[in-house]
Each structure stands twice: as C-alpha cells, then as structure tokens.
Length: 167
Image 1 (cartoon, helix red, strand yellow):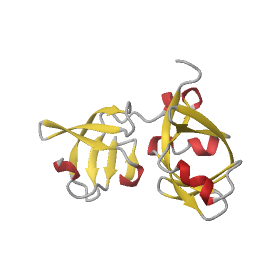
Image 2 (cartoon, rainbow, N blue to C red; image 1 turned 60 degrees about the vertical axis):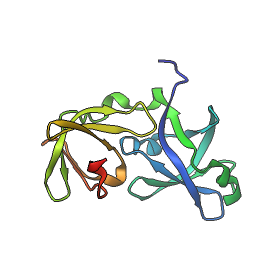
Image 3 (tube, rainbow, N blue to C red; image 1 turned 90 degrees about the vertical axis):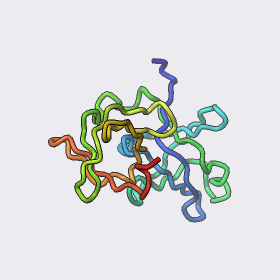
C-alpha cells in the first residue's frame, strides 16, 4: 500500500454558523478518526487538500462539527459542500475494525432480517451483502441506521427506512 493512499471517511455536509465551522457526516466505521486526527483531507477534483483540525465536537449520530485552520466564514465552507472527507489509509486502524461478516441483522423490533455475507467498502458507500430468504440483498451501512452492535452475540440491530429491503 502506498503511504499516500487515502480512504474516504465521510462527507462535508454544510457550514455550522458564520465563523467557518463545518458539519461533517462521518461513516460509522470511522467515527473514532476525528478524535485521533490532526489533519483531514478534502477531495477536490481528485486532489487531496489537507486541512488542519483546530477543533471538533460531536453533534449527534454520525455528525461532527469541525473547525479547519484557514476557514473563517460560512462562505468559505460552501465550496466544500458534498466533497469527500479523506484520511491517509495508513493512519486508519482498519485491521482493528469490527468484522461484521457472519453477524445477524435484526430490525429495531427484533425480527431477523438476514446474515451478513460480505462487507463491500470499495465504493463511496459501504454496503452490507446480506443473505435473506435464500437471496442476496444490499443494505447501506449508515451510522444513522445503527441502533446497536452486540459483538458477543454477533448481532447488528438496524432501524431501516421503509421500503429499503424491497429495492
């Protein structure tokens, strides 16, 4: 692996206030990256632009408020909206991430939805390949959907939007 490879950990959502603070949506499997990073990268047309983190604060599930050095107004944040937030792959603790293969997926009412066969994190959105009723379905792994992860029982409890299992 090249020491300059980057992994997408989230996306710039919007400005927060008028002083250049930014709301980021961070993928569930990278939620701890914000706490351990001094620099994040924003993908600007294929170039990884480094930004020094001045401050961070968790807002709610998956959303983090950050302040990048040199960004001092909402107008300076606007061009970053929708851009991928990246981190050097070598700095991510990928080998220590929870392996979800084999976990049962339950809905918030306890109904078994299926078993995770594969975690596809090669695209923009991490997808869970799930064996359900003899067929395969794909469920996006989004922090807002996660209710609970029980490692000892190998159960992932999700609160999915209506109709997502029918796609």
